[in-house]
Image (cartoon, rainbow, N blue to C red; front, side, top):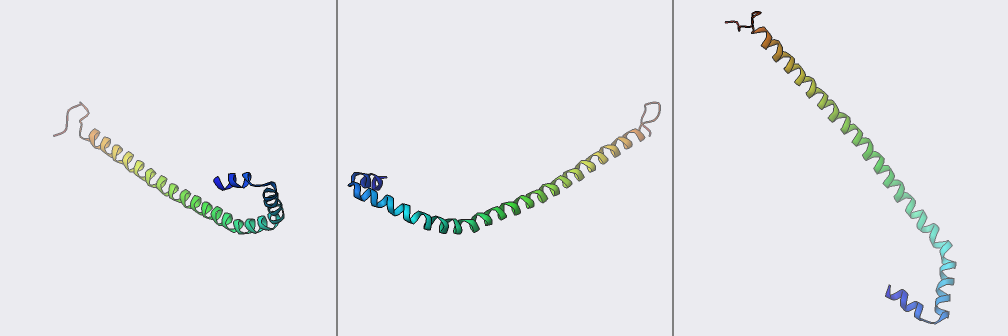
Length: 96
């Protein structure tokens, strides 16, 4: 910021020269910068898409594992209930 302040404190010729130089070089420099930035931006977008797809796959796999665990837990509960009802006699007394 100090450099910018020092330029503004200089004479008007210096400020005008900087403005004219920027106006002349701007149209030349900006396309070069834009041309270099486009491949970088495209690569970043591609990486984001790939990460998103991997995340979807991982989330789907985790969902399948959770579904399997829930199904196994329900099966174990059902089996435990069947075993508990089989060991109780119709009169309400346990079988010996």
